[in-house]
Length: 133
Image (cartoon, rainbow, N blue to C red; front, side, top):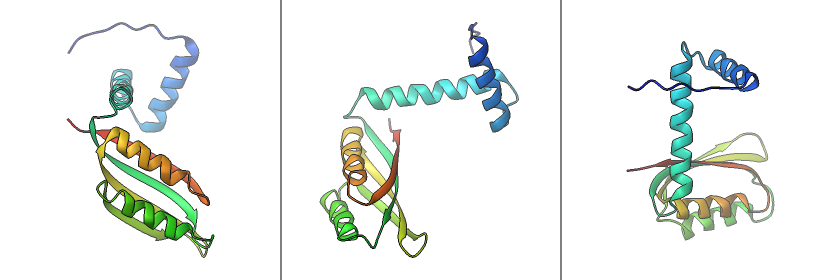
């Protein structure tokens, strides 16, 4: 390991200490290492759209809205080579949650995720992309 000295302004230090307390870190070094790893992973994902990845796409939608279920199913079939598995959950009478595990290039996964979230009556959507070596 290498020792690095970093100067942080007071507001940033307060934010770091708050995150440490919320997540249960016992040292600033470990908190900063984890935050650095997360930032480097995100930079790696953003830098190379051809890089292989796995991802979790999570979204909610109103299943009773006209044609939305059909459109979402069709999208998954159109991108069948990316979809590894899906989980469908009924949150209440009208709202459903789906979680899709995806595998492909970062660019393909982002394109598919953007396509799903852009569908009418999809209320919320997030994709978590994890680069593979």
